[in-house]
Every structure is written in structure tokens, then in C-alpha cells.
Length: 256
Image 1 (cartoon, rainbow, N blue to C red):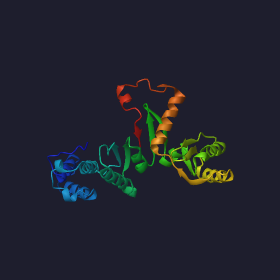
Image 2 (cartoon, rainbow, N blue to C red):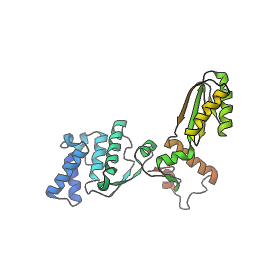
Image 3 (cartoon, rainbow, N blue to C red):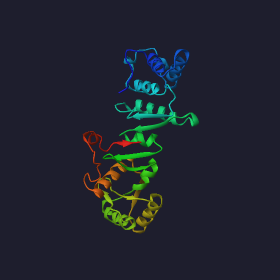
Image 4 (cartoon, one colour):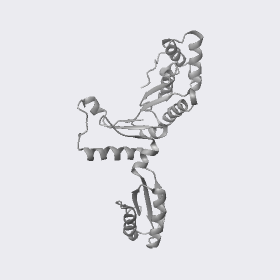
């Protein structure tokens, strides 16, 4: 939730935070006004915060954390409970924070919205059962599990032949979707493999109507990484000795 005082206006909230941070008088008022405009809250600045929407309150909360121009800002699930429009507003504000060059703020964000991590994070740390499961950029983590190559055939009778070609080329386990007349398989070098698949299907006389290459989502990456660790280590084998109820409640939290 946004930790702002609903009985104060937006402007009064920021001036209060400014005073608590040691910015008094003209300096505090100027900083409050600057942040209100920066976060698009100027028109509502003199209304009670209790009348604001959830997204506006969350932006005010974020603005309050920036009164002192911190070099590092910690955000704990800042968009939980927000609608898509309000979430996009917060994402835009966070991106602007880190894109201001030498004046930018480094942000440490914890979130379970993996799309949020994908959109905002330069470096991701996946935490599973209290331990680091993987680190890397969004693109780097996705590259670990490969992309999904999928072909759609013109007739049901061609599905088995298409699956055999994909199996021979990739060594994977093609998945058939009889309703959509498609066959898909995970490939590590998708940009090179998909053209080969199309050529081999053509050579085999398999009629193809569509071929796509889809990168994995971070949700898929997270599930693959954490499931792989469970299989490799055994159930709870790598849980730390002081693993407690609080850690269990936070199981499979995603930090970005």
C-alpha cells in the first residue's frame, strides 16, 4: 500500500517528508512542487490524498522516497494491486529515474510480476527457497532455456511427419497441438534452426502454412530454473539450515 497520509493533501504530504528529511522553508516547498510536477500530480496537489486513486497514491509514495535525491532506491513490489494503466505509470516513473545519466538513481526492485522485471531490470536475481537460483540480464536468462520454434501444417495427417522432422533436427521432444495443427519444440539457436526446419519440412513434402519463433517469457524462465534446481538437488535439499516459516511464505520470490 502507499504509505501516505490521506488526511493531508498531496502537497502537504511531500512538504512533511521534506521537513523530516531536513529540507525546510523554501527548499522543502520547492522540492515538493518539483516532484509533484515530475510525477504528473500537479493538478491534484491540493486535494486530500484520501480522494486520490491507487495509482496516484503510489506515485506520491514514490515521489516521497525521492525527496532527498537518493543514489539508491529500494522498491518492494511497487505495483501490487494496481490496474494496468496505473502500473504502466509507475513503470514509466521508475525508468525515468534510472535513465537520467549521472543524476539517475539506482533502483533495487523486488517483484513477483515477472513482466515488470522484464520491462525494468538491467540485472535480475532469481531467488528460490532462500537461495540465488540464477543471475543475469533478462535477455541472458531467456537465452539459457532457448526459444520456442513452432510450425503449423496444412492438414492433420502431416502432424506426425512434421514432429519427426523437428525431433531429428533438434533432438527435442516436439509437442503436437491437433486442434491448431501445430508442432512446437524448444531450440537454443532459434534464428539458425527455424530456417533449417522449414527447409527440411519442404524437402520431406510436409505442407507448412506458418512458422514462428517465440522467445520465452520470464515466467517460463523462472519455472524452468526453479524446477531444474528441485530435480537436481532433491526436495528442499538446498534449503538453508535456518529456513523458517517466513522464508517459506516468501518461497519462490523473484527479485530484480
